[in-house]
Image (cartoon, rainbow, N blue to C red; front, side):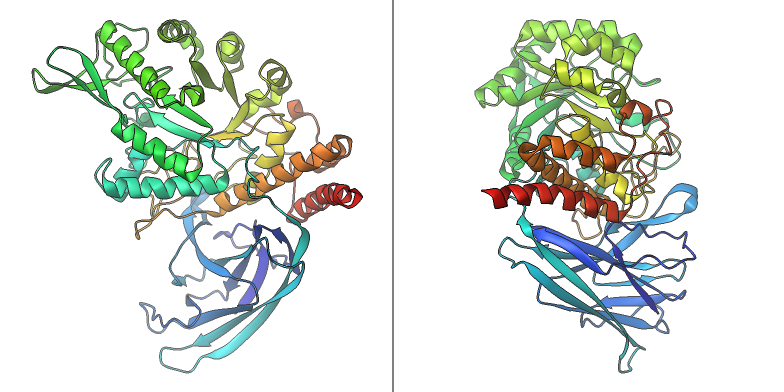
Length: 572
């Protein structure tokens, strides 16, 4: 049995490499953060692996059992990594699972994620970790196979509690998908328990935005009614229950919406509230529309009619306007109207006139409303930018326009990654350091942070397979976390690396406050190619000569930033 201790950013796959992975000698860590690495075990055979002293028998009783024990003065958490099918039928390790015993076949490493929390009270110094692997047959005494050691160096820096405060992270939530995937009733107590779990995982990343669905199916299921390569039901339903009372008046029940907001606020997600379904709704081909709605856009507002006792959809212009006024008034009554943005996702060129007409109606109802738009086309960006309060631009649009946006909308911009660029991105097959890179890019683009369209947009069989519409959506684009058999939401290696990238962003900002002239060359040397206009070959394909980083380059980046920070502390 071979064992390798490798960086946290290593991505194990069934495309096994011939050379040995480069091993870590130590991990540099800081207080109020966590040290992390991966342990790779492999001998080319099918084996059963166990943490600690648990007794776990594999299904095939002739398979050897390997028991892993870790000794350290620091707390250590071990998690097995689960594989998912990616490009070219290569499987990649990504999901961090809770089970403490797992069988791996011989065509892949048995990868284990080891995380060591470093609390603020931990003393500066070196902490050894000893990893021992034992082997046994079913009822035989186990024997020591190997021992590996690793040092964790805790440095003289402590991340603040509000480390994520300045990074404006907006990963869209898919609340209805949670209920559907875990097969619980929509908006039930069990659904809200899962939503609370979702909120806490997002808050740990530094999420700032709440996704509110106020009109039915704003994305029309992302074409899941047409695309049939892998089964998926991706419809998102409104959080507002609407009825027409016996007097013919539209009424709204906001209890679901209010509870969702309360869950997010309690988790610490409270900077902005993005309302989908009221502007820029998608009109994909072959999807039935509310044809007779007297409004430029075919919004989908479903209601119960108390007179006829039937379900219908709003078609009358006055009913729609009353619905919109009621929503706006509700957010004002809650005292959070200043946090609300009416959001639109990637309006198309031919939709610009309709978009402007629909926005004018919204503004006529309340001229104080704020608009946030995700732009993927430069032509649309240029024609609508004056109407938008918070522009979010695709990676390609950001490369070409971030300087102008920083001048026109200072403190109000974000960039986003989705099904493109091909790199740097957060796909299942993407090198994990591309996920971490997003922290540096958010700073260099002079944006306030990152937007990602999908946190949990899972297809039907996401516990084992996250493929959907793979010709347009690279595998992994639909999620950053995973569902589980246990009824909980599980994190991923990509999640962990984004967390690390946000730490990098914090260090850059702290060092920049002290000595901006010293920080700029550090970042430029790290990026190598300094001009973002050279980062893409076209709107989808990146320049292959940029972002060729390794784990040590990030260690060096941190070391140089911390030199600036610590020098300032010593001068006080």
